[in-house]
Structures are given as structure tokens and as C-alpha cells.
Length: 145
Image (cartoon, rainbow, N blue to C red):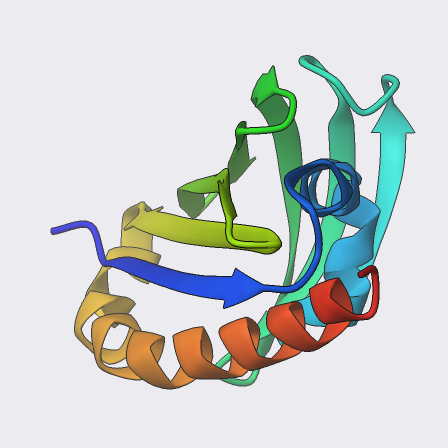
């Protein structure tokens, strides 16, 4: 079982502004409640860019290496995250909506080793985390308008 959460919301920011903000994954420090720090290790923000993300989740802090695997300005960003106990996919879709944008954010989590026993707890917590994430993300994106 791979816990997955997907949320769609609107923002007053243009698709280009949303894409540029989300494509720079270091901005996760602002909008992702679980991100403690995020730094670009290599790349220019496009495909192949690597980030070192330190996350706190359910009381545990862990380092995850994220890589941009798709970057289609201004409509799609796909990052994969990996460490010894975790594989994840973050996919962000952006499309014009009125004078702003509609954003769909999907996150999929897979756990390895002993961490796989946490799946039921993670799945139960994801709706709470998703709400916090969308609230923060919308706030920061609306400021770009």
C-alpha cells in the first residue's frame, strides 16, 4: 500500500508565477509544514536538479534527496524523493483558471524496511497534513499575484 494524497485548489497567481515558485523546491521551506530545510545541491531548477530536504514527520526528522524528473513550464512539475526508508513522488499540475490558476498537488509515499510498518499511521495523518499544506501553499501563491 502506498499512501497517496491529492488536493486541487485555486490561487490568484498566474500559471507562470505558480510554476516558477513550485519549480524552485527550496520554497518548500515556506509552504510545506514538514520541511525543516531544503537546499539545491545541483542543477538549475529544471530536470535533473537535486535538492537536499530535511523533513520532520510524526516526530521523526529525516533527510530526503529530491530530484526533478519532469518540468513542463507552466503546467507540470514532478519530483521524486528517496532515502533508505522512503520513496516518494510529488506531482504538481498547474492550469489557468479565471484570472489565476488551479493547482493539483499529488503526493505518493512508499516505505521500505521497518518504516513500512508506519503506513497505517501515515495514511491516517495525510488528510491533516494535506489541509495544512494547501492552506500554506495557497497563502504563499496568492502573495505572488
